[in-house]
Image 1 (cartoon, each protein chain N blue to C red):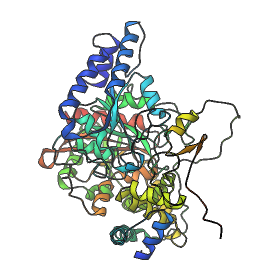
Image 2 (tube, one colour; image 1 turned 180 degrees about the horizontal axis):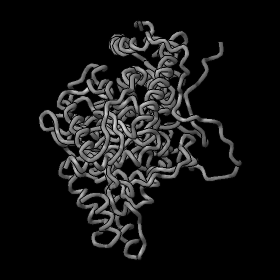
Image 3 (cartoon, rainbow over the protein chains, first blue to last red; image 1 turned 135 degrees about the vertical axis):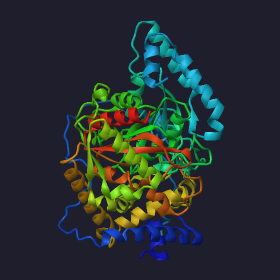
Length: 97
Length: 470
């Protein structure tokens, strides 16, 4: 069953900071949901194919024609920080060693 | 007046769209403070739209089948220049640069957008209590929830704020609030209605659909928004179904099955209404019998692994870079962590983590993989049932509207969707029709389920139920 350590690990993967109290809270929540999921654990489904989507999706090709797009300035106006028509973010790499 | 009657009055010049709008804005003024159905009321742009409709009528134009009908939109549908929050702090203040296809189509049919409605944050919930901006209350009884996640849209129609509303349904988020608020709510076949501009929760399940006071009103709105959209790769090729034409064909000779496996899920007062609905359909000439969908009992589990898995991927886009909230940090990773931690509410965080866990190495086969195989069983069992029946019948919600704060346990809240989830996993169509009242005189909804593309027969049965209920 999912442990506090697992919850801390998935929080880090999902880019969420949790306090100790929050880890306790979410561990309890996820344990309850995963305990309920035990009802499908006992099913023998090796011969049943998975369904990922209700439609039989296949890649479709279309002609490459110029169409309208959303306005660049309107998109950038919604961004928290921009610099010369680009999204600006804090440093992505640490200092050089 | 129904939406159809209002549109007819506006098209013929008997009533002005401005007058219709003002009547609804007055109702919003009167009760919105206690109901809190809306995130945003777009009174000014609605007045401008209504004036344009009236000008077109005066010029001899036909503005369309929804001419001058006020329409409320769940706040997870993009509206150009109008805040679209998903009732989340992480999107607070965001104004989309484009309209969702459903918005374009509804406006093209003459609808007047009156506002954006409250929801459980990112459509995750069954009571609208998970909104970061406060809950919506049930217009029938203000200490009860309206259901969720499209609780604001359901409440808006029930309170008379708008004759029509759009919601989105992933595991029951249109049908369950429709049932709790005593209105009609439709979850169309997956792919019937474009998802372009619908903020994604679980992409293999999400579907937009109408709320209305009558089955015919829901039909006219669905006809307006359905049909292929090249901007949504999962939108099916079929043209919009013709529904109004078949509504009055009755149910004589139709085979209707009551789903055995879901019969015990409902409280006795609700189950009694399902039985009464079956009796009414039988009296109207349908052949009613018991039906079996054995894998339906595993639907809840499969859904609460599949939907969070898809959500954990879809919600990765809220990273403070391109739109919405940003909380600064020393580096980009820290900025993203701080942004997401401050911007998402607890239920959203829980589902992101649940989904991340279900997809992670070592657990994928046991959880997500297994749930996908259960989804196959559910689809097979429904397909087998539809060999014997035209439509299936069960409760929409296991209970009437519950009190705010009553379901603190996550599993108790998740069980609200036990009767709506199975058909969502199959990708089929379903509708909740008000059918009398249960405990405390609160509305009960009966659910009619149909196979994929089965909307015409489903609407016939819904109309028959509506007739029998009144």
